Image (cartoon, rainbow, N blue to C red):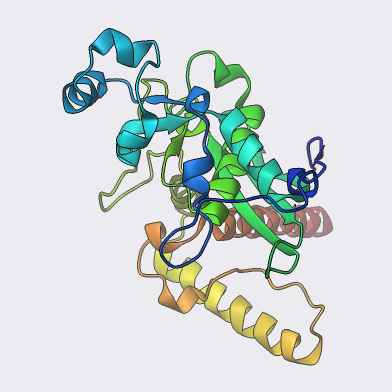
Length: 279
C-alpha cells in the first residue's frame, strides 16, 4: 500500500551554471541555502538564543534575527524548506510506502529518486517515519499516516543533504523531539521495537527465540541471494548482531511482526483443520 507519489522538476535545471556555497572540503553547503522563513527557534530555546544574539525574545518569535548565527540544535526547519532544498538539488520523485499500519501506529518509508548532479550519478535514498498518538500533536493524531509520511520525507532529505536541523514534522505534541525509551524494556512503547516486543511476548515467546528464528531466515536468504541476485531478502541487517530489541531497525521490526503474525495465522488454520478432522 502506498500513498500519493510526489513529482518534481529539478530546479537545478533552471540555472545553467548555478553557484553554490561550499564547505572547506568542496562539497555543497546545503545548510547555507535554507531560507530564513523556513526555520524558527525551538520552543523553550528562545531566551537562550535571544541572549546569544543580543536581540529580544520578541524578535526571535517574529523571525527578526540572523538564522545563520544560530546553532542547528536550537532550530527547527519547516517541510517547505526541505522541499525547496530537494528541488534545488534535483529529484524526480518521492515515493512513500506504508510499511505498517494499525489504529495507533503507522510506519512509512519514502524513497527519493535524485537526479544526476555535478559528479554524482542518479541515486535513490530513503527515510522512515513513525507516528503514534504519543509522538504527534493533538491535531495530527487523527492523521497518523500523513504525519509518518511527512517524517519519512523530511528524514530522507535531511540525511542525504546533511541537514542537522530537526524538522517540524519530527516534533512531538509538546513541540520537542519525541523521546526514545532507552531502558531495558520497550514493551510499553509504541516504537517499532516496542510493538515487536509486545508481539513476541503476546505469542509466549522471547527475544532469544525470535533471534534464533531470524538468524535462520537470514542465513537462508543469504544462500538464496548467492543463487539469485533478484531474490528479496527479509532483513536489512544481520540478526546475529542483535542483543536487544533496540538493536532491531524499524524496517526489520515490521518484517518480524509480519512474519510472526503470518505464522500465528497459519498455526491457527492448521489447528482448526486438525480439530475438524478429529471430529
